[in-house]
Image (cartoon, rainbow, N blue to C red; front, side, top):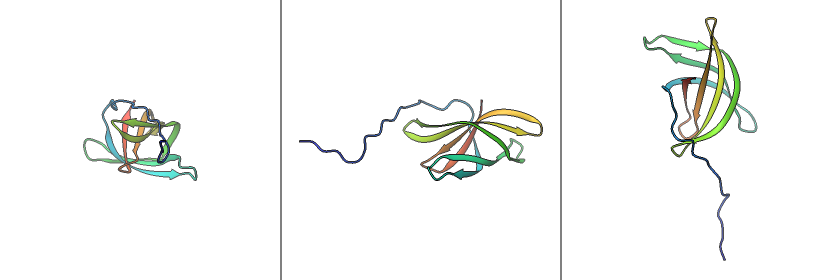
Length: 103
């Protein structure tokens, strides 16, 4: 007779994140059911200038596992100084840290 502790969670490994990751600060809305919705991000450029981006359109959000680490990958359209870009905002659940990757 066997027994089971907890639920069996199926996780699909997504390999390695591709692209240049840069750490960011993110103000995020956590909904009552646990979804994360980025509201404001702050990113520093190579010259040390800090940019605040408030114009964020969330396109998709998907939970993924990279190298055994659970993340939430947000595909977003951001606008800064009239320029539009598609980026991935990655929230790492384990460390509660955010990174950005240009797509």
